[in-house]
Length: 115
Length: 300
Image (cartoon, rainbow over all chains, first blue to last red; front, side, top):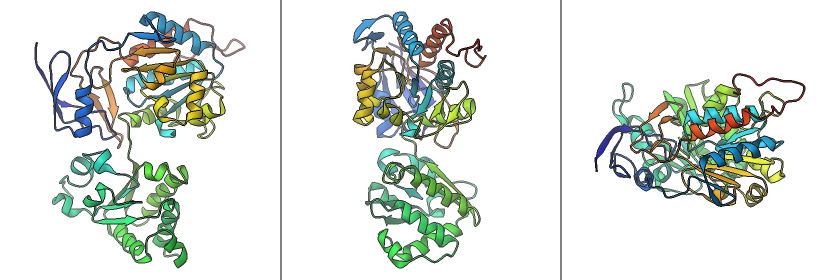
């Protein structure tokens, strides 16, 4: 078991995006989040890399990633007015892909801002 | 100024790390060089951190902002109108004086303003007040963003489409119209016939008619957890949590981009990778636009 320390880590729990957190982690979980607030600490400590969930679910049944990607593409392509929504708890890089996806589909694109 | 927000409990480090305490070249004494005002319908924990607490009557934010806008221009306001807001005229004029005397004012507004009666009209009024204050001093307004990278979503959509949210590409180019293309409206009306949900859990947060529609149509969810939305979705794909096990960039609420430093390695793919692969799978299918229109480089 190796322990790693990440200095000046960035917390994405709330919109403050504090970037001075000191994370102490082993291979599966974060053990300590120094300087983080109560909300940030809970955010960091509650995520682990255990395989808690199946790779993918189709109609509630376990499926492989490849099957799920194909199923997602088929449903979105078949739709006349597909909606791409959310994008809050993800990276800008993924958000850029989402914009391209909505553009490709001729669909709707929206985030939490409109709520 | 904080308006309709409770940073003490929702953004615990906002006072200490960003808005009230930090010492700087122009504010060497930190908190002592600043005046903090809280406007809210009840004295929350944040009221203790403020120098002035103004208790506005619920649903009267728009009226109070409009009165302040009149007062900064020395226009007359009726006493009854002021009395209705729950704030006295003396409190209003004192606030205006302090706002005008400030070298640099900032209003942070929360969901207590933007999600209550009046909704986006309240936000619009406050933004106008901040804009008009610039006739006297430097003044800005900023929403207190809840979720991690929701600011990033605004910035990325603005960069790519010219609009921050509520967009449609159904004519092949982006158009913007909140109310028509915003998600809750689209779902409640039953317009959308498929939904792709990423980094959000509308199944836990949206009004019931919107959730019901998500359950009727094929919904695809990308999330590190199996969420409420996953349970009503056609397809769920587990992805690595951003910032914890996935690298990338996130925007702070003041639109400063910051790199994420994941401490863990996830067995799941990142959001970016999965969205790109779904996009690639769609590119192989016939393009939806009729009459031989071509996909653009940005789409591919």
